[in-house]
Amino acid sequence: MSAVSAPVVTRFAPSPTGYLHIGGARTALFNFLFARRHGGRFLIRVEDTDRERSTQAAVDAIFEGLDWLGLATDEPPVFQFARADRHREVVDDLLARGAAYRDYTSAEDTGRLRDEAKAQRRAFVSPWRDRDPAEGDPAQPHVVRFRRPAEGEVVVDDAVQGRVTWNVADLDDLVLLRTAKESEGGAPTYNLAVVADDHDMGVTHVIRGDDHLNNAARQSLIYDALDWPRPTFAHVPLIHGPDGAKLSKRHGAQAVHEYADLGYLPEAMRNYLARLGWSHGDAELFDDAQAIQWFDLEGLGKAASRLDFDKLAHVNAHWLRLADDGRLADLISDTPPTGSEREALMRVIGLIKDRAKTLVELKAQAAFALAPRPLTLDDKARAQITGEAGERIARLRDRLAAFETWTVEALEADLKAFAEAEGVGFGKIGPPVRAALTGGLPSPDIARILVSLGREQSLGRLDDALQHTK
Ligand code: GLU
Image (cartoon, rainbow, N blue to C red; front, side, top):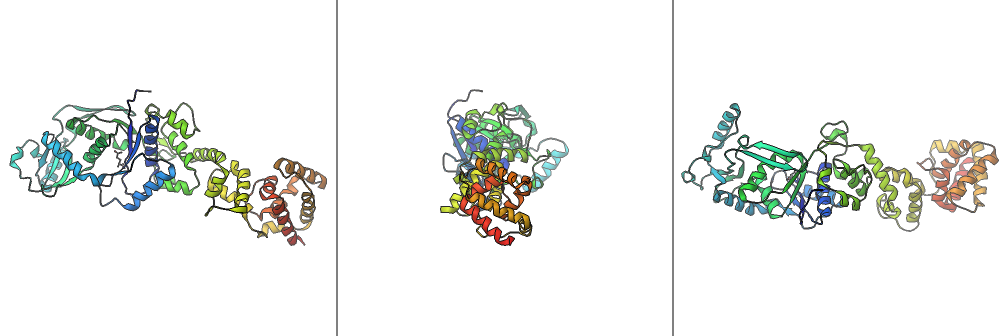
C-alpha cells in the first residue's frame, strides 16, 4: 500500500439530474470505503450548478439511494450553486494572478474563430488572450477564461490510470465565468467550481469515473495556477453491461432503487459493487469491516467491469442467509407484522431463507405460511387431493395428530415411514399433501412446510382440504 498521509477527505459529487445510478453508487462506495479505511472523512457535494437540469426530486432520490445503501456522510452536504460567490472570488484571484483574462469576443466571432482553429487542427485561442486588459470594458458582456500555460505538458499521476500526459497546446482556454458583466457577476463554470469546492472542502482524494479524466488535466492546471496542492486522482473505468457494451436500459436495472425493488439487500449491493472494478486477492464475499480494512486504490482495475446478474444473485443469497429473520420479516411485509403473523413469518423465513436469492423470491416462498384458512385451492390442487390421495391425507392427518416431535428431521423420517407403511413411493404422497397444505402456492419440502405452519395450523389445513375430498 502506498503511504497516505492523514487526514484523508473524499467526496461523492453527484449532479442531481436523475436517480442514483449504479455507477454513481459504486463511486460513492469507493470514496466511502477509502475514507473509512484511513480514518478520514467522506463528504457529499451536490453539483447543482446546471439550474435547468437539476431538480429537487433528483436530490431526494440520490440521498434516498445513499441512505438505502448505508453510505452515511460525515457532514451536511455541500450544494455547489450556493457557493457561486466563492467561485467568483476564486476567478478574481486567478485574474489578479494573470492566470485568467476577460474575453470580449462576441459569440458569433468566437464561433467563427473556433471553426477556423478546427479546420487548422489546433485549439481555439481567443484574441484577448494576448491583448492588453485595459482595452476592454468590464461593464460590457464578456466571459472570463483561464489562461493555460503557453507551452509544455500537464501530467497527472492517476492512481488507477498511471501517468497521463496532455500537451497544453491541445487545450483551449477554458471559460471560468460565463456572460460576465461586472455588475452581474457571471456564472461560474463546472471545472472551476469543482476545483474551488474540492480545495475548500479539503478533499485529498478524488475517486470518480474515468469519463472525468480529461477534466483532471484542466483542473490540475487551475490548482497549479492558484498554488493549491492537487488532490490524488483515481479515475475508475465505467461499469459495462454483461455483454461488454456501455451500460444502458436494455441491460436491465440501472438505478439503485430498482435493485432495492428487485429484492437485493443493501449489504449485498455493497459487497457486489465493491468487487465491481476492485479486488482484494480472490475475496468475493466480505462484510463491511473487511471491505474497510482492505480497500485500497491499488486494487482498482484498469479495465471496465461488467455487471453480472448471476453473481449479484449469488452474493445476495449469501447475505440473505446471514440476515436476521425478524429484519427479513419486516422487509418482505408492507407493514411490519406483529403477533402471531410475525411469529409465523419468522418461523417460515428461518426454514426457507437459504433457498431464496432475493427478497422478492423470499416473499413469494413465504406466502403459503400466511394464507388464511380455509385455503383457496386452485383446480390443480383440488384434483390432487381426490380419491385415493384424499384417503391417504386422512390417514396422514391422524398420524400427525399423534406425532410428538415436531421438527424437520423427525417429520422427514416419519413421512418416509408413512410412505413405506402405505406401500407407495413418496412421489404419491408429496404432491397431494403439499396441495392440501399450501393450496398450490410455492413452498419448500413437506417437513419444512409442517414446521413452518406448526401442528395446529397444519392439521387445520389438512382438515379443510378433506372437506373437498368427500
Ligand atoms: N458531478 C460529476 C458527475 O456527476 C462528478 C464530478 C466529480 O466527481 O468531480 O459526473
